[in-house]
Length: 186
Image 1 (tube, rainbow, N blue to C red):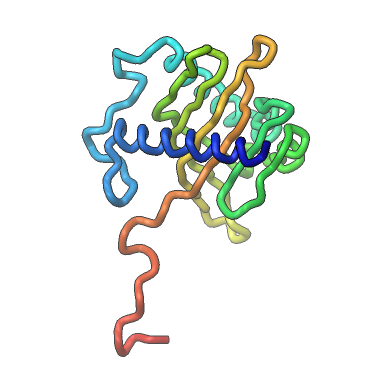
Image 2 (spheres, one colour):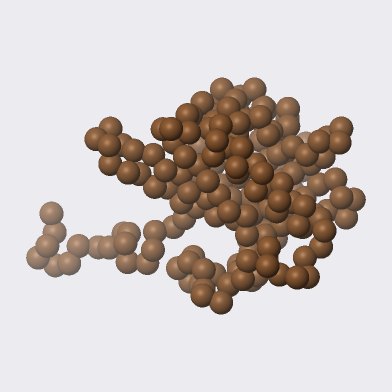
């Protein structure tokens, strides 16, 4: 069962990443090219895609106002969260235990950049870019940015998050991992 779920997740993530990269025109440094278009302004979107994009927007607005408690309220009972460098979180209760931030201390926002609705109309996914804003112990701003994918499913007529996965953006080329130059070694 877990292996099937993992294979499904890998396939969905690969498709979403390929589609997002192709649709949004990301360059080699993971930054959007100038000619990238917003899916919301593309007139050929299906009603299912538009619905998922609007649903994702409502999710974002609720979390901006309500913080972690609002975040956890959108998840299905059997939901899964996958994040950078952390173990998977299984279930709405565990998600709620971890999502305890106050929007005054931590502000999580995101912008959907694309979506796909499944053929049966009861499951789909969105992807996009997120930002987390907080302050360190000295009051200095901390900003974390990355990409996410949210898998949605309709349960008893209500849309819930089945899985949320995110990964921090890679550093911009030249800002990470430079080797010391001869004579400047520490």
